[in-house]
Image 1 (spheres, rainbow, N blue to C red):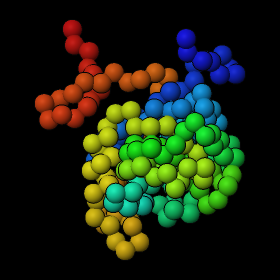
Image 2: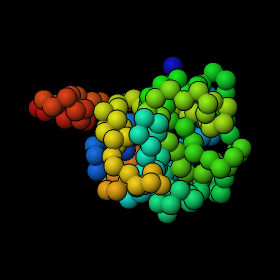
Image 3: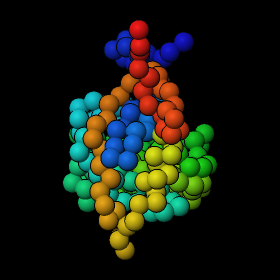
Length: 187
């Protein structure tokens, strides 16, 4: 049975990002981190992430995005400004594809997030984990290989064309080159 939010509607469970390098989908851990999950979903549906770049990429560590200024210093939450952490000992940075909030210290979550490219146990207890890559991990891995400058900024932009929230997993199919695409209904 699907959990409902305070308004009586089903919570957002996934956020799809269509980027210059392909599509990936984040599965939200809305039961463990309801405010953080809602923050990403609501920002996505408001068009907040559309046109933003992945401003920080560190090979074999993580990719970071969600800052409308593209500097790593901007971004607000759907709640206005920053909001508190939802860190739980049940969620850990155990491997590639973990989605967490980027922050500048405790309780400073805004709109920025990162996706791990390997296990990062040293981040446990410091960043709210609120999801994982549901599909499109190959896209994430390719992003992690983009050439960067000495400040970890990509030399060529990796941009979000569009992001939007879903209340259930997307229907996907795999094309001949092994990439997942949204399934098309044919009559």
